[in-house]
Amino acid sequence: MQEKRLYRTKDEKMIAGVCGGIAKYFQVDPSLVRLAVVLLCMYAGTGLLVYLIAAFIIPEEPAQ
Image (cartoon, rainbow, N blue to C red):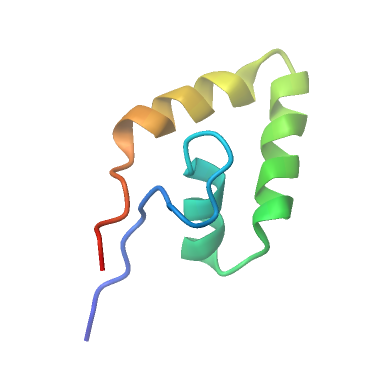
């Protein structure tokens, strides 16, 4: 059995691929994740900080 891993996606990428990777991991629409990040950004900039940290921490999806 292959273990589930969180990666920044290449095919659902708008800026760094973080939202697309999170959406793929949880099997939801990437637009919902992007909307959540935008809402968090509007609330004291928390979403922007979390996004930037995630962009550096989450590895990019390996070539298949």
